[in-house]
Length: 148
Image 1: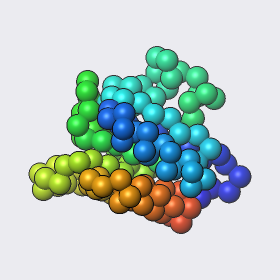
Image 2 (image 1 turned 180 degrees about the vertical axis):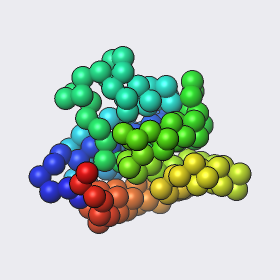
Image 3 (image 1 turned 90 degrees about the vertical axis):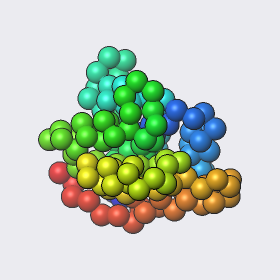
């Protein structure tokens, strides 16, 4: 956690039920000051690069964590991951893949493109809620990163 700095998550999720659950659990745990949700990969890249409707960096700050689904409209999650990790300005942002896919191919592809973590969404509500809370605590409260 970065002392004194408002914590920000970018949630990239096209399933409205999964997004609502993530937002509720991370907010209820008191882990974030700002949680921004986009529903497709193109919007995620626009947000991260402060383009289009996300051009105002004050209103759309650089996230401390990206939660990224793989199966997204417009631009898929792997392409978003590739672009983030190949950008000098963005590559230090932790990207956690949060997906329903347990396929070994997806897992390998995500790590080959430098995902920081790969989590398969549990099917039951309580397990998914616990996973979201624990992942938020790990990346935002316990994990240490350089400040620059």
